Image (cartoon, rainbow, N blue to C red; front, side):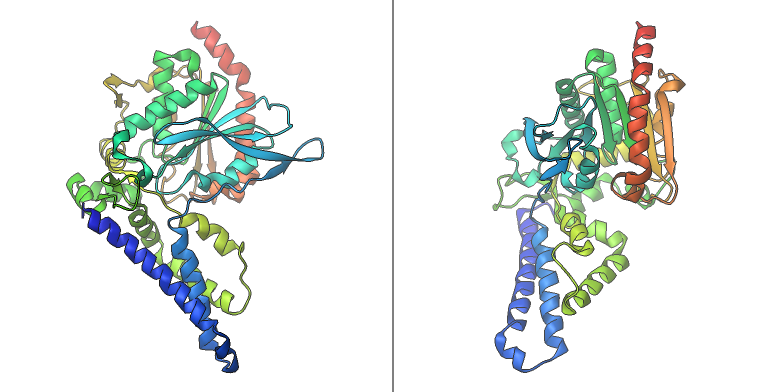
Length: 420
């Protein structure tokens, strides 16, 4: 499958389905059909509308859509998304609230590079902006990065996090969501040993596969069953001529989306069928729950082949983070070197992607960290998405994380003094 023709074939399939949806919607809306009332015509128009929108979203990077927030002075303040560090494979963004005094808490929100854009954390960002200065890692779509920019694997990802943390300084509170949790842990350990003045003050790891074998799931079982050769042959393709990254080897976003949806095929099928009926009855809207969710869920990005393959091999198959033998540019990262960064883990009791036990394993790896700087939370009834963007996050987890950040400020300084 590692050919440009295969990549372009998937894009042609997507484009054709978008065209079919647009055609069905347009034909079914032809004025002459109004003289022949027939529910099938309305259903055809509804099917076309849902289909066109769904396939169109797959190649569109969503906007953050955060225009303003109310502040303590009773006024709405504009929010500007500024790029503070620009790199070939990802930028560091700051959500700057104009006219508001700088907040004492600084948070670096590490977004996952797992097929979706950083905007997947939109609701997380919105919930944090009122009380903190929020910075987010904004990873780029690999298909738009020229081959001349070089490779990007998990070691490069880790070094990007190191640079971002250095830029923000030692008062930063890092929150890593899902996939980047093990690499964020490694980046912090890297700084703890080589540049301790640049390490963050606290680190919160949410639903990440620190030790994938601690509680196996379908995701980890898949990584065990399939060989690296099979993955490379079936998942990796070469970007076609349409994009700047022509010739780059990637794990295509469309292929990732097919994998995502196949895991819960019945639920997604029912969701789209119900939406077609709602559109036909005139009950749907541009920003209804279905469109709000799927406009984001269907917007996918390509990952570099080396990042995807090294993640599967080194994090899931070989367990380099779980066994504390991860190497970055020839330097073995020792997680035990973390001695004065407060660490908290958050897991969802119903998480079927990073099951309970996988993330909390980080605390056992931090052998040099005193217990008073460790915390963990298991959220009852919460799935993977809910622990960083749903009701559980808003009502329970977010307050706990902010309390953890505030409550450990004096303890980390004391630990630093003891270490000195």
